Amino acid sequence: MSGKIGADAALETLSGWTKGPGERDTIEKAFKLADFKTAWGFMSAVALKAEQMDHHPEWFNVYNKVEVTLTTHDVDGVSEKDVELARFMDALATKFS
Image (cartoon, rainbow, N blue to C red; front, top):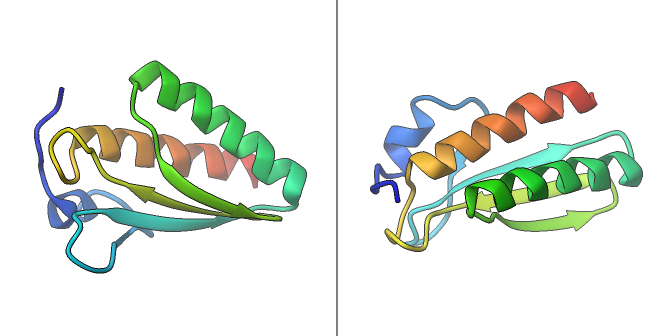
């Protein structure tokens, strides 16, 4: 299990991610893909990585938009696991573009 690093520290190493609203220690990003099929493929690939990591995102999908919130429930905040998954999503979104 990775320890809590916090949203501010995570955001120093990520591009396009923002701190989530409210009191929860989260990071967020919205991905806009070409169409629903592409968004679904993106989510499917992320789901496989998330299962491998045993670390699952909170997300919402409408048509070509996937909104993602990352936090590590075990440490009640953002951890290195969130940074790893965020980087994976960023790289994958570039491939899907």
